[in-house]
Picture 1 (cartoon, rainbow, N blue to C red):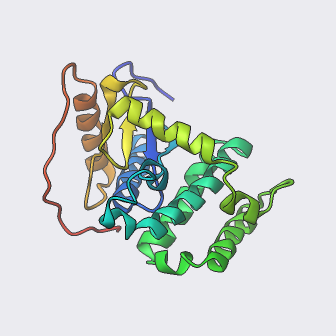
Picture 2 (cartoon, one colour; picture 1 turned 120 degrees about the horizontal axis):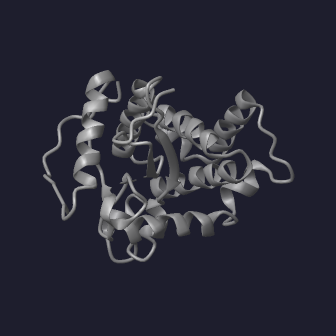
Length: 227
């Protein structure tokens, strides 16, 4: 494998699996990772930002947020299992689980189904069986419904905010591990493929690492496509 000193080699990707915009951006990152090969290796470090945790102090005063509390709670439960996987199986397994979750939640529109606790347990059990993962001494119930992994998820969420600033959501991307190269987004309504994915990645990374660059934003968004 060849190397290029001007080529990006890693990105930290902070996500909540329940967010459809983060899902689209993540598929672009994965597409970029595949399209770079075999010339260059892009390392994607999967990190957590929980919409439930970052909004926990706002539900009582924000009715719009309160209407989403069940969905945010589903995201946190899935992140608890992702945090377990990170601790027990490593980064790549987290990426695999995110792919499993995102396809179900967004491509296959199973979000409302998985709000039901028994369905969620069965869903995670399906993943465990397909990947031949051992849970050691913990049960699915222990992982999803206890706060055992909430501390590490909160630390990751606050780490993302420390780099990007507050009043943003998910995804958050960090290209250099510090606040000067960490931003919310990009928010995409479709998944770039192949050379288009690489071109966008290089442009975004160039902006993110440009000295003095702070924000580029608009509120208009097109119709989402997960294809």
